[in-house]
Amino acid sequence: MRASTGPAPMKPQDIVVLLSIALRERGTWKAKDLAADLVISPAEIGYSLKRSIQSGLLSEDQELMSKGFLDMLYHAVRYVFPARPGAEVRGVPTAHSAPPLKQTIVSGPLFVWPDPMGKVRGAAIRPLYPTVPQAAAKNKELYALLALTDALRTGRARERELAMKELRERIG
Image (cartoon, rainbow, N blue to C red):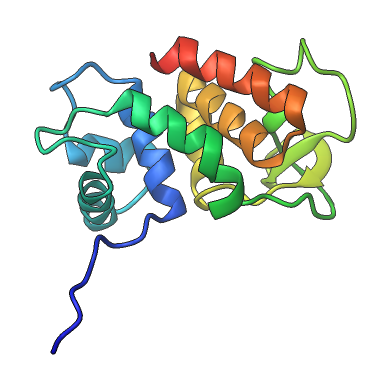
């Protein structure tokens, strides 16, 4: 007997794609636009959309299932796609070191996505996908969502609660 195969496991770039979709009006986006904005190949965007539909985070008609996505971010992202601070490098601020949390939380070392063009030095946090710093530079709203997601991946209880509050307000 052949074992049935379930949905393909989510990949970190799926979170990036879903965050980008969250910023777009329902029915107004195309996969090719996501690919260009996120600097991810069109084929990888297609695979990501398929995984997100299989996981129930995106409907068949490509509507973001906001409540399920927010639940998954809060309860699972730090376990499934953890971020551990590394060596001090030049980069782009993320997590509590980036807007919108940097005005509220002033603690610990700065966290950055490694980027030779970055203007800040801090503990390196591996982004969910290698092109995240480029995508964030193109879209400040996406940058905020990605940084808030990193706060969920790295933060203590207070940072996580503040990040989740912001994500709920921004995603719905």
